[in-house]
Length: 250
Ligand code: PEP
Image 1 (tube, helix red, strand yellow):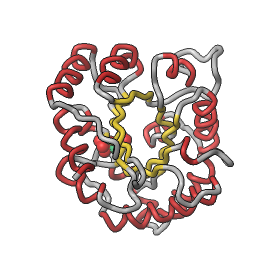
Image 2 (cartoon, protein in one colour):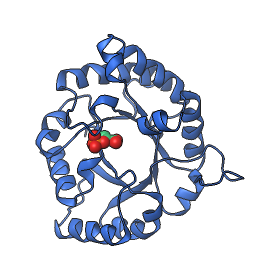
Image 3 (cartoon, helix red, strand yellow):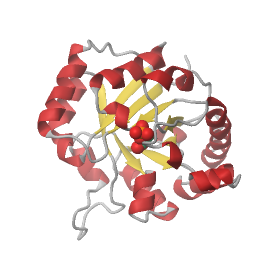
């Protein structure tokens, strides 16, 4: 059997307790059948993790955080550590999302430290990389992404304990996903870099993220080098999320 796909939803700063109940009920009503070929993951805001962990687990859906601090505890007002996420039932945490990099000044060095903290807490970090439109226009997309990968992914880690998500910044939330040719080309670059760093050319999952929706999921997820998707807006509605999952299974 090939690699198991990961279909992950990133709710960002969206969602309420009532909305979370509705989402889980809607997911349950869709008669989710756990399938061995893919794993499902929802990363809600931290405020909803405690509430959603058990009902999602009952549906066979995993839960994760959207960010973590690099230290296990201490005087870091407003931050959440990886071990706190693990304590709530998380198995994953997104690190280095472009919104964190752009809006919170997170550097590759910080992202790598967060990834290490996640690993130490027993979580799988989903390490995000991706170029801006200006960098793509300047012909620097592959160089930028390779440098982010080199700086953000810890060395010598079993690649099966990490996930890399290629998320072109210009495709996030824009409604304009990268073309399948551009996704395939960048995933080849990432696969080579990731493989080299981890000493296993085949190991580890590489997701695509950026305006994945029910209408384009099938062609993106059919690409050989794409091991799943990181989905923002379209993960907020259970029906859209499941339509993307169905596309992965097709
Ligand atoms: C994201 O924020 O990770 C993302 C991919 O968002 P969207 O699917 O809305 O483009």
